[in-house]
Image (cartoon, rainbow, N blue to C red; front, side, top):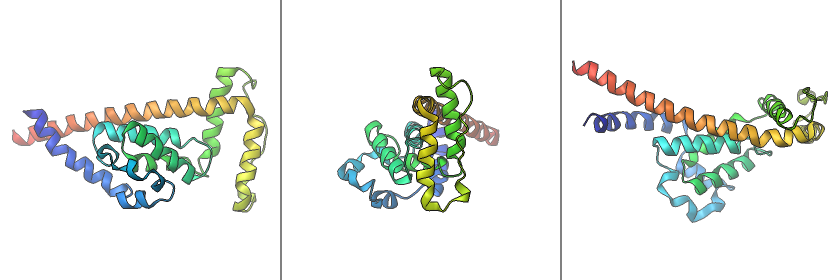
Length: 195
C-alpha cells in the first residue's frame, strides 16, 4: 500500500524535474543524426522517465560521451545505445555533454592513466605532448587534439573504453541508488505529514 503511494507521489515530481532540463521529443527526433533511426524511435522506454530507463540513459550517455568525435557523433551513438538497450534517449543525449572542449583533456588524461595502469606501457607519466587549444583558432582544435591523442598511444586507446565502462557503470548505479533514496525520503516526509 505504502509503495504504491510513494511511486504515485514521487514519480510525477521526478518526471517534472527531468522534463525541465531534457530536450523535447521533437527536438531529439529532428536532429539529423538521430532522425536516421526513424521508426526505431517509437519504443516507449526511449521517452518514459522511470528509474531503469533514466539510469540506462545516463549510462549510455556517459559511454557515448567518450567516443572520439564531436557532439553529433556522440549523439548518434547515444541514440544507438538507447535503442539497443531500450533506455531513455533524451537523457542519453543530454548526458554526452559532459564531454566537451573544456573537459576532454582532463578526461583523456584520466583515460591515459587507467590505460597505463592496465598495459604498463607508458611508464606512469603522460608524455609531454603540448596541447594549447586556446592559442589556436577553433578550426585548428580538432587537428591539434588528434595529434595530441596520437602522441599518447596505446595506454590511451586501452584507457578510453575502460574509463567509458567505468563511468557508465558508476552512473547507472548512482542514478538507481539516488532514485531509491529519493523515493524513501519522499515516503518518510509523507509519513511525517500524516502524523
